[in-house]
Image (cartoon, rainbow, N blue to C red; front, side, top):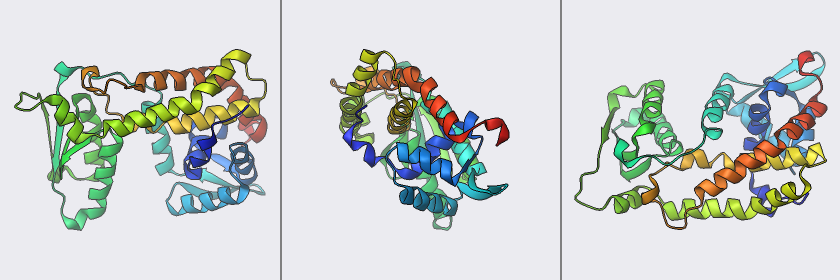
Amino acid sequence: MDLPQDEAKNSTQLLILAVYGHYSRLVRGWSSVADLITLLERLGVPAQATRSAVTRMTRRDLLVPERRGTVRGYAATAKARLIFEEGDEVVYAPLKPARPEDGWAIVSFSVPEAEREKRYTLRKRLVWLGMGQLESGLWLAPARVLPTVLKWVRRLGLEGYVDAFTAHHEGLGDTAALVRRAWNLDELAASYDRYLRSWSPVLTAVRETDRVSDPGDAFAVYTLALEQWMRFPYLDPGLPTELLPADWHGEAAQALAHELRERLADLAFEYVASTIGDPAGR
């Protein structure tokens, strides 16, 4: 099966996390080096690139070397497992537009230089929660994101530096203009369009054959399409429909990703199981 030509842009580290996370009931938090190389090669990643990515991930405290008998492998750390758990909550949940009457979450913070690493982490996390930046230290999102924001503020120990509010926009400017100050919706819309252009032909081919015969092909399509999709639920704030650009195709991209998952998941898991063997003995 022909895959989109831009699949090489997938980060090797993200693909490794995808293997550990999406196939967790089979991998069970550990993979031998040989099996990981085999799986990543099916995704178009050379063996040396996989080894290099694993080395970088050990430095980032995402993987840790662990032998099982005479077999060398790597186990997912607690930090990586947290990423898997939170990813499942976000990536597999349907992204529906917020309701205007629910209002907005506003987050303001001023974190001192002594806590600059936590400040950087907070900013990065706010982006990945779909918040838009109105100006330095002032962030906006649909109100429903606030509980998750507060959870991260507490996790970072920054409660004393952050203020959070819920509010309604009463004017005096235009709400749509305010939204465009906070988010680059044209860029996000273009990303959705690229995803659709890349994966619509693949979905058409899958529909025409009704069932992909090669589990390895199913694994490659399922994993690459899902890895590219999983950025969107973090970056898309889920704005009310009336505030979105007229040519917005976010819901169509979501439907495509979910249909590929439904059609290919069983075969993809079959391929992983055949590669790594019986999980009960791992």
